[in-house]
Length: 253
Image: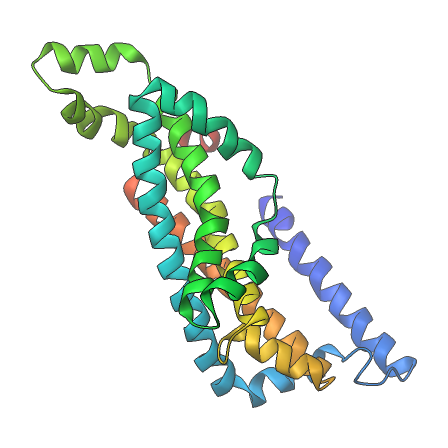
């Protein structure tokens, strides 16, 4: 029964691909309207080296942007938790800002920062920063204050208590926010490249789109989805290593 549940999504996806292939062949749909799955796979194989080189650029931008957003989110989270006035002023803005699509800021960043690396990295930072900051701040706020009192009673200073108790306790929440940010990071890099770049998957996608090469467009989208899943998987592996106790409650049932 367990294996049947796991196989159901795979079977559903296989059925969609088969119907897609049959529909394209049966109705003679031209390539510039809708490529068949077989054509997409052939395009992926033909352009694998080009996609690989562009993919490396996108991944490097995503990792750099996510790293910067992680550092900023942790620093701001600690400040908000340590100083109540900062939390009252900043936290509502963070929550509201999560409802704003940061992608719309990319054209403005291009105008002021040009077509270099900076606007693409900043786009990734803006997309990743807010979910990480909110998750980390909530994780620290959920800690029972008695633990902090206990550590302080043994002579630990305020910041030492954060290092020993609060920050480690908030790691599960931090990793949950990072899982969301990992997917956003690839999207942010691609959007930044789409608007203004000379390399990267966003640039490649724009170029093949303008040439109506839809088989290559679909192939590029597959690569983007794959990279997003890999980023999410990487955070999951870190989560299993750094916080192996997470999810144990659900697995015991």
